[in-house]
Length: 552
Ligand code: TEU
Image (cartoon, rainbow, N blue to C red; front, top):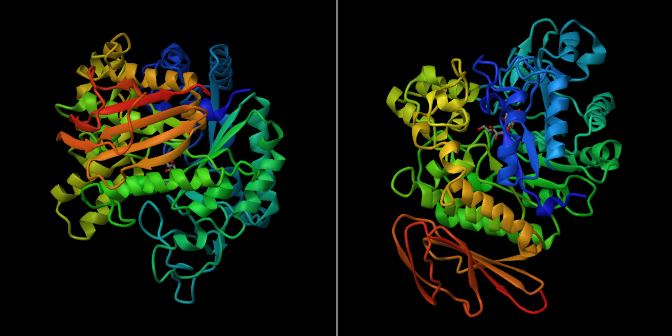
């Protein structure tokens, strides 16, 4: 059985991975073609973002049919071929299940609109207020009201995301049974992993105005959430002990995550949380430009590491996904120290306690998109916020500057396979522009190069298999208050791992508070790192040290 603590997950956004038929969109066959690349990297699971039938208003997170593959991504035969080929290489598939909402094109919603009361109870329809306005003042995560009026029904329906993503009513046992059946359908196809999209938003509490915020306090980690997850576990994936699950937890609390991902809680294997990726927001406000708060980043990463360990709960550890800007652009350096900083950021994540997730292209040090015009953007959230920010009076230039930093499209540009045209992603016109720096940043030039970012990720993944301390070690911060160093220690049965990182482009001096006797360098982004009690760390220097004693 595959131990998820020793595993590494690779996330694929199929639309931007590899196009094999020249239509400008990637598809499942593209993934199958690149399995040897992934095998070379050494990953254990591939998480595929949704490829089900969908109008693609949110790139597949608006599912219209959970059991059928969108023809744009291929066929069920393509999926089976992918599963089989992956299995042959010891790689497992993790599917992305979006159960907080469906597309408004889903047959359930269509029946609801047509007046069928059975299906109206699948969603959250509420009457208008006496003045005709929306039932509450809740805001959609993509901007604007979270309620849309459906004239056919004479009521509003709730959509926490786009207005074509209607929230499901989990209070209705029939909805929960449908969801269980969908999970079992994919289990029957041999799927051994599931990611559950924004799953901590499924239990809505009271429908009341939020005088302090956008409404999230009423539906985040809601009143019946643990009950719902335990039931889903019992009735579906929990019946197969080989299945690994991860829940995407939006604005969650650590206390809830102790239960979502607690070893004996009967809910999920692990959780994604996002607090450490809001250190360059202003509170919850993403559409601003503020420098990243490094002290806060460490505080959040470390408190989650310690808290989850103390409660025997498991984290997914990551910087990147299809909703986040590229980490090398965000916390590293796109220029002179591109390679060094990308490796440093990799080292920080892979040394932590948790299952590391690598998002396609991260292992190559892919950077933000660099878009400068609205026509280049595709994401509904970016397009909505362009208008919202313009309506607030911001100049076009200021809005572009904000999008350039925070847009989700930064991570959605096509995978850079080669230095050639369109980075080898497509022979057609890509659905979203390829980053021109594919001439410099691409897989072809890195796979064979022992000094590449790719080689560094490969080494980190291999080390996790070789040294148990990566998977099972406990966690302790080291010199947490230092203004530019991020350092921590892991201990397991006579193995002691020390991870030391200079997070900045300026060199710095670091007094190591621990005795370094007996430690040797396991991996570093400089060829000549020399640990010392009084250590001069070079720009973005990152070192993993190990000490092994007899009882290991
Ligand atoms: O994302 C949920 C989510 O809350 C975000 O990370 C979201 O991108 C952010 O709030 C916007 O600022 C998940 C998916 O990962 C995302 O791609 C989907 O758009 C969203 O759910 C809706 O299904």
